[in-house]
Image (tube, rainbow, N blue to C red):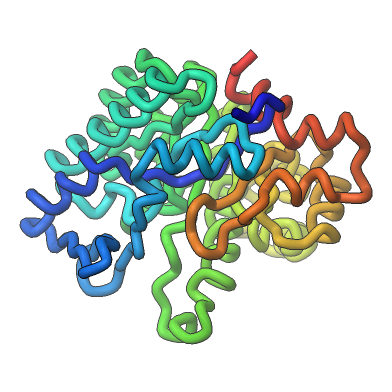
Length: 332
């Protein structure tokens, strides 16, 4: 059993109840579930969005706990990933959210010191999202809200989401974002849909949150960016230049780069120099450990990545491994 206080804030989970709902009811909205001869599952939504292989490691809690022990991770913050729920109609979308949220709360109740969760809301219908938000805010183990970098054809600055943001902020629940894969022909080779698409998708979402006034409208709302902020940090000079010279960018009271400390970030950069740059830019208090469990691109040793960073002292390592997230998620 792991005793050191460490938390992985970017750890994906597929409950069997969520997968079964798609298998039983997804066909009416163009979604199917298939399982190959080796027991690996895939979810297909329409012609372009395919998720998988969804191995047992995504689903099996006991296997997850064993892997956490091996990695030295005390706690996982369970989150969904693509295809999320926004492709579904209102009825199925709500049922998928309820199934997922109930499953992560049940996992927490079974293992209160090891598992918490980020609830999924049917943002395609903000009224229903508010309904489910009120319900999940009372569920044990729910410590944040999970949201994709776009909802169908709506950006995160869309005014229809503002009532949901307001209530999330009132409840003091942070929002954790995740890309939905930019579907572009130029990215279909060489795994570029992930290597390039996801980091830029995160930057696009952050740009809408900044320029679209979300961060100003909700000054207490905490939003966490995956993959060490993606391409956002390196684009800050370009954003500031646009703010200086372009009328359509003068929607905010100060330079875009000044908003970078409004976000929190995980450690999924795969490079110590990049992490050092991010820490210098936003501060050690805005960084939390993440792994991307259990995709093939994930850190196999997320704790070791942090403990082996030569630039950090013991206190700074502890902040990244535990106390920053513990404060944000109100774990202590």
